[in-house]
Length: 133
Image 1 (cartoon, rainbow, N blue to C red):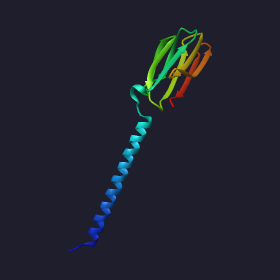
Image 2 (tube, one colour; image 1 turned 180 degrees about the horizontal axis):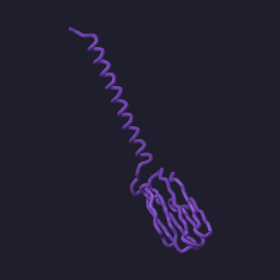
Image 3 (cartoon, rainbow, N blue to C red; image 1 turned 120 degrees about the vertical axis):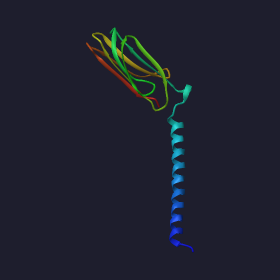
């Protein structure tokens, strides 16, 4: 007692399992490739240094940290923050002086100055941003 409809349904289910399984495996390989390309490279990551300097004595500083989060501090000038990130990281630092004087932001990546901005005014704001390539 062979049921052709049941055999067709079973064949269709088997084909769907094979296609679905193959797609899942392909997705896993894609995720691994992306992680290896853009993922954390541990101690061999990219060194980043943010610098705020100038004649102003203090500033409100907001920056993107090593995990991609945002931190804000009231800092004496000069201010420096150093950390390590992976390829593809977004870098940003914004500072507003707390009165008068010049203020400068800098982003250094692996010892090379990538971005700088200077402003001189009361409560001046400077912004520097970049990406780690």
